[in-house]
Image 1 (spheres, rainbow, N blue to C red):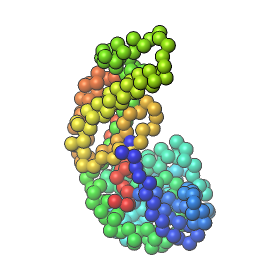
Image 2: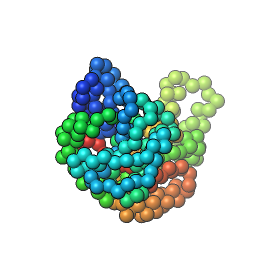
Image 3: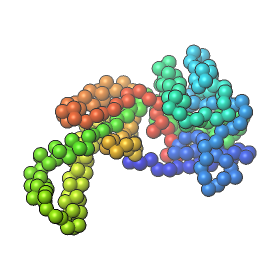
Image 4: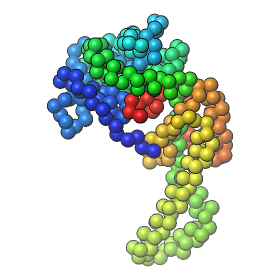
Length: 286
């Protein structure tokens, strides 16, 4: 997943700071300047999911976290998606994270395809402060983001391989490296010999991995208007990327994924997410 850079933008609001963290809004303790701490406003507040580029939104028959009805609140020309918070803070559990994302995806399915997602866990008390501290200063940037996202969708591709199987294939295909390894088997090796053969094998595996990535990029990148490469999440994951593509071209993108899978003879595990809120392309800091 090119790794995302840490980007922060602080907006003070009383004793709390609203912080743009990697482009998403969160809250931090103002008196703890050395730590970025995810905290939440105490009391009965409003849990925010995202922003729509219109202040006219028809009622949404959706439920959010804690089975609370999803509502909208207009602020200037935008609308916030929210529900009434039933907890002082929400743990970042799999259930809650998926619940947050599910709301955004269902809103998109209801016809509001252009939505600016907010980071999980943001609770506010007062719309006026949100307007004064967040909407007004960044209104132009929000318009830019909504313009960029109009008619677009995010899709994600994660590639996994079986390292042991790939190493075995490497040794079968690379005769020179295989013979060198075989000559060393059963011998008492010096440290330099051990390091040398290890580096050769590691380098060959990295080249093999990059060859796979290059194939995906060669076929998929021309279909995207913007690409974000994220950190790999596991040792078996070799590539993790998000693509911003025209909404109606997803079937062609999916066909290309199938084409690549067949090219590699189904030896890779490809996790393709063809419908998600555009978290990777909704950063306030350009």
